[in-house]
Image 1 (cartoon, protein in one colour):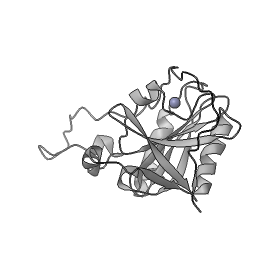
Image 2 (cartoon, helix red, strand yellow):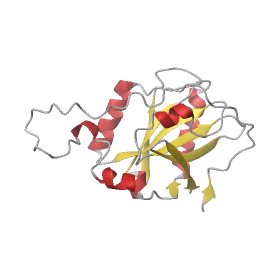
Image 3 (cartoon, protein in one colour):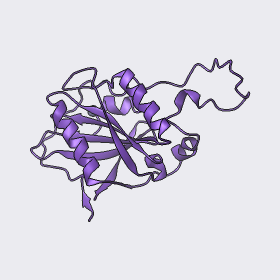
Image 4 (cartoon, protein in one colour):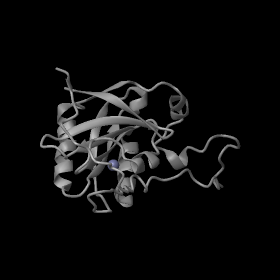
Length: 201
Ligand SMILES: [Zn+2]
């Protein structure tokens, strides 16, 4: 059975213009000073293994307008958001392929919000690295980047948008602002958030 996870609860909103560190820990592409015999002219993906070469193509292609997540995985996201309350919670969802390529989410990696803040998050860098390595070891990729909003809608803040470094990953936001948690999913590409219909079941 398919249901909408993205139903917007009655939420008066709020400016959500707070500062929100977002994925500041995400590694930028390396300096290119690779002296280990990289083929000249070949793209250096080693510093961004979370972005397979296909992402360059996907970035310019239309993104899927819908994504699917199991009820169990969705519950794990909500539980983690609640665990983190009153601070924002964060984590990474792995999948067999990127969300942009229509991949399916598989494992939620619960990660520490190093900012320990109700208004921003910073994925603990060491945990992020470990998660990335585990995802790579499993021949999987980053499917989604998750965090919670404790008092604002499940919509990307300006800071979330500014720090969105994964154009092929879904940005999953769980809002605890209303009694019933709301999870919504977004593409954030070139500063533009686009909501994705999240079906559950
Ligand atoms: Zn946010």
